[in-house]
Image (cartoon, rainbow, N blue to C red):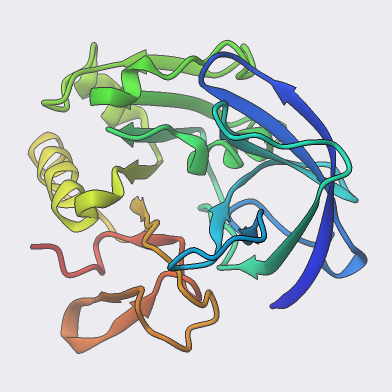
Length: 246
């Protein structure tokens, strides 16, 4: 991981909720892959954790497109201090026909980097927006992506069929209680499937990352059989079959 400076090239409002910020990357960051993130200090003021975790949603060689809240103010030419890359890339099964991306009570931003890669490999993509995530505007997503909206009780149209067709599932939830919300998703999938195999249902973890390098261990996640994982080093996507859920 490196500390470096990046420059904002362009800022484009997508809708009233989000904007896309294009960052010019130095040579040692151009190899970033979907799932890896940046820890960004955007201003000169002090904050308790100093940096925000920014999720690139599209990779363009020497630049990345980052999705940010529309209420935040950025300007072309602005210089940002960043640490990165943070985390491991998303991993997929060797053979995939359909992938389910599920956002529960949070925007699906952390899941969006997968979409171009999956579509390029002729993999079907379904995005499920549950709870407050159902209000997320999706007109900027590729038309090939199926978008389904559901409620806070984890119900959506044709739920049994959607789960049955998915070869792999990635979920992101509101970070206020990640383990508790992932447990609700696990229980729901377990009720719909006789068995949840390993490498099928992944949680994308987004705890606060004070260091991003595994030194502080503040992002530790307990696994079965006494093992642990660090979201900043081993994540963000962890197989929920291995995570010790409440």
